[in-house]
Image (cartoon, rainbow, N blue to C red; front, top):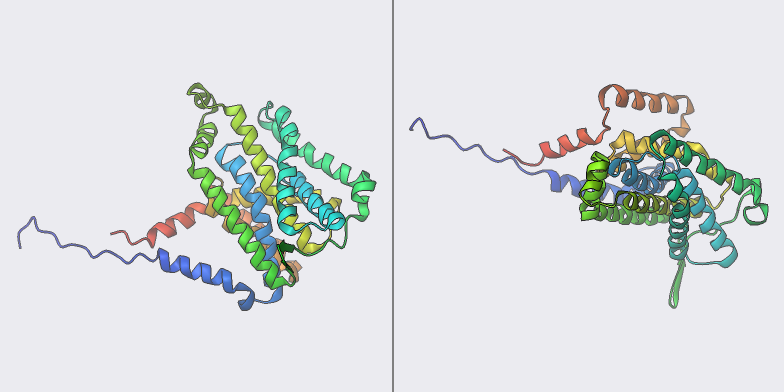
Length: 328
């Protein structure tokens, strides 16, 4: 054997496709593997994945920190609840209307807010949440105040001569899983488009992006509206699942939860939003049966993020994904 001859190293098997197939199988079979309460926890995680996807477009891809997701989440919940209770509209009409109303209201709110910078913008979005909760409490003729809306029907579908209602935890899980999958595919399409690349350019250097012809303010306004629409759709699912909506839907806790999902999972990554939703909502919801452990586990996750994973869990996930990719 000559000195220049090298022994070819065998290529490792690509394990990403089998792992992806396993994860899909687990997602489909989840209601039959775990208990009913585990399925409930997964439903809550999938619901909050929608506003988290919207916030990730705003924070992770455009570089705008917003605390307004709870306001648009509540608007979507009330919009869907009012339509279902008073008009008996089918679920797909309610969720589309909730997204449209939340996104539409983001337009007049975003026009003045997006002219502010940094801390001022964050405080302004916080004000939207406070105003939304005040309106929900005091517009009694519409929202019933602190009594809230009750007896919101389960998701109803009317397709020509066929009509059916989604009832039961398992069936609602599959509905929520389908909506979350569609939302994830929509976000993937947005970030892979030229518009998504322009959003990243604004995040990296807004002045430079504007100098090369990107209408930065217009982009920020559109992304703000899209982010609100995702939150409104999540609120619609939330209302149909719990069948009750109250001013507590506007509480600041929801905005901070969504923000932790995005930052903890990994801002600017779709996989981070998915993992963050399952970890920071699904796991903590499942641990409600052990309240003495719930906040300890939650706090430990936050400490691990602060000290070891400052960019969220997404970089770790991506390294693992690349490691099983079959490279030489």
